[in-house]
View 1 (cartoon, rainbow, N blue to C red):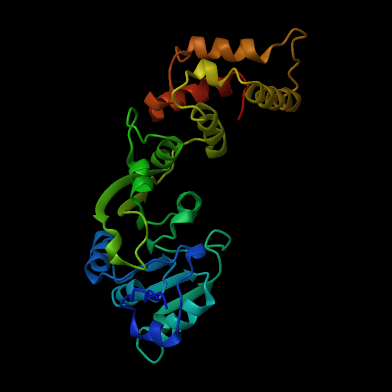
View 2: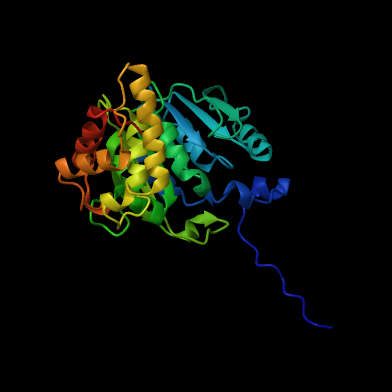
Length: 305
């Protein structure tokens, strides 16, 4: 008979082992098990005893319990009912129970309540939408200390000219100050993910920049579609020109502006790019001020995104 390979055993939290919980990769469940990393993340958040803390994806509660000991309240948002039961059981009958509120559901679809600080080992597949959900959340929170896949974290802090500089970088940095805090190896998780991780501190800009974010997002979306192309080439695309013309017609209609009979959106866009000396510029080298000036130039001419 051929040898049957015995499955590699991982050291699993005793309570989880008793319940027979198998971590769900669809939910990005990689439980942070190293207490030193957990302690360091909490310390970097500069937590106060009066703080309400939001934790996304608490898992089996390794970090939750540590935060509960230092904060006024923890709101834990968890999608997996099995882990919710585990978390409740872990705090049941302890002084921490009254300080824990659990939101059961998808963090992206859940209306988040007020919180001062967010600390989370984020399920990596929801990283980008979660960052913007947090940054557009009101009222403002003080800061977020979040664990991400390392390359995603590097994109968040990338500067113009960097290889990883992208739309995510500039959109995040418009709304927040972002700092890379520490690298975390894959062996600090159970089960270990296939990628390395990093912890990032995000501090929202309060007050926010005086800018319409959906307009800004529309502009950066076009510019970064091919970040190595010039802006002139990016704005020549038929689909881009059609969308801008549709928006321009709506703008004219709302403001009772008569459109010239010989109107040509391509010529109008080219003129704006030439007037701002941005025609030959590439998105990969543009900073926040460059995009702000360009957006202002477009908006002044009635072009919206």
